[in-house]
Length: 331
Image 1 (cartoon, rainbow, N blue to C red):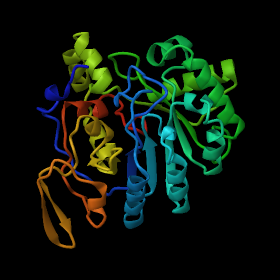
Image 2 (tube, helix red, strand yellow):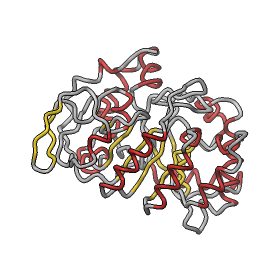
Image 3 (cartoon, rainbow, N blue to C red):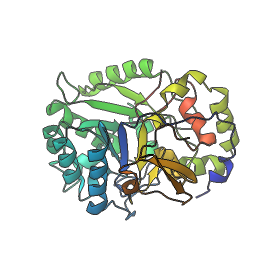
Image 4 (cartoon, helix red, strand yellow):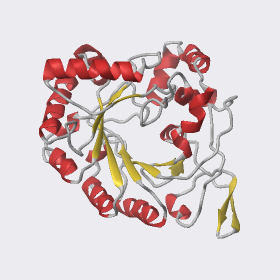
């Protein structure tokens, strides 16, 4: 796969700094039952990287020492980590909201038949990938048969109360099927809701539109097709200064499957670690940090508020058009 990182480091993106951290986005591993073309972590059935229970306990320790409100679990398919239910249960005992970034099809896989009931019991918010309401587009991105499996999983979640008038939140995620920006989130949400309800009697809460990042599998595809420079220019041409204040990296820490920390999930995939060659403040003591990686366990008593965020050309993907984050459009 072609690597886009060397083309992203030199950037004129404006400097941004961290605010108060209230979300931990934790990658539980790259193992997945799917291999989607837009996947920026190159997840798939043959990946073996999985977060250990020891590292999960270190994540929980960080939650205990900081004012973390949301635990955002991703992968791969996060449910395929053998300690997934343990982590969710412990986080919910602490009153922390939990998000499961679910590919939907995992809920239909042998051995995971009870997963939907578990998520409902623990009132886990489900953010589910459904790149289009049309079967052909989903098949192109995610493989043959995935669309119907996703529809069946959505019906199962609706039957449990997800996406209905209840406290069980079901959001869907749209990714463009190519080198273009997502359409208007609000307009596309209305179209999704109409089509899914009319054709499948399916309901959900919100649609989140997320811009494809020029990294990993998608970035390699852009390079292979000679579209990389044009896509970067598209992102820059649609830059919106108003999106800077709402960037997710200002209030989020991304944690990889080994427990190392990054400003965001995209920087994690580019191996651009948080706190590289900076000074930290801990109990009014300056700690020199020129290491390549920093582990979450090293930040238990450290505040990183105000620290500069590591940026690159890919950051234009979060500020183009309506903006993009793991929570959808920014405006």
